[in-house]
Amino acid sequence: MKAVIQRVNYARVIIDEKIISQIENGLLVFVGIGKNDSEKDLNYIVNKTVGLRIFPDGKKESTLSVKDINGKILVVSQFTLYGDIKKGKRPSFSDAMESNRARELFDRLIALLRQTEIPIECGIFQASMKIQLENDGPYTIILESES
Image 1 (spheres, rainbow, N blue to C red):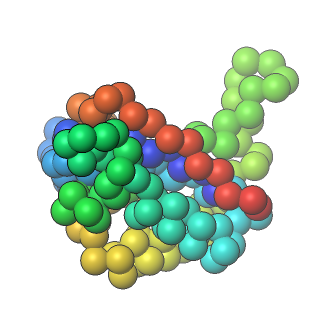
Image 2: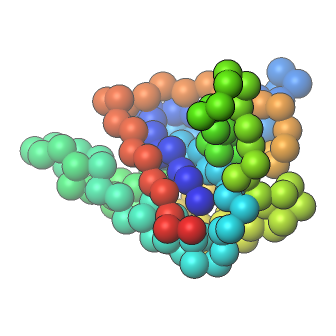
């Protein structure tokens, strides 16, 4: 499982010119689900995401988590994180999980994140979305589980 995590002042998901979800002051998390991912990978991504200390405390950078600042998390499914361009110039997505199973794991990821009591918003799985955001920093972390 792969996640690209960005510290944002705001982020929103737009589908058909309508804002369907948005946050202020928190994390925008793009998640790609690999063909071998499991519950173990979900737990790894959830624990790392909610525990990341990448928010300033006023004195030092990177001392507070999203929970510490009463922030929110916006999660967007993005299978293209598994795009492989080792051969040619057209990406292969053969390492991404099949969509029905990936949807189940994505829904489970959202459920696990909601158990943390951090406000969670999300995009719509397999939808064509526009993402608007304002990076804070910029501060971007790339996570990859072991599977």
